[in-house]
Image 1 (cartoon, helix red, strand yellow):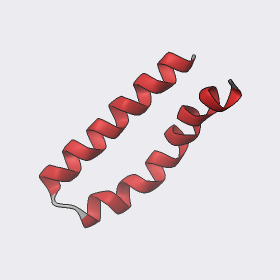
Image 2 (cartoon, rainbow, N blue to C red):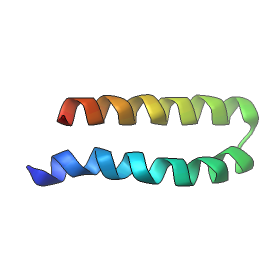
Image 3 (tube, rainbow, N blue to C red):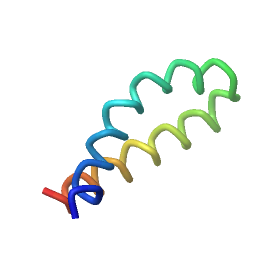
Length: 50
């Protein structure tokens, strides 16, 4: 059970570290969609676990 709670929180800490790398390597339109989707899914998972 602890794994389910801490995984989204860990992802929400790691995601901002990866965003600049992804944003530089991918086309702008695709990067915007991918990063927005990742942020929304992380927020939903964190909300569900809390």
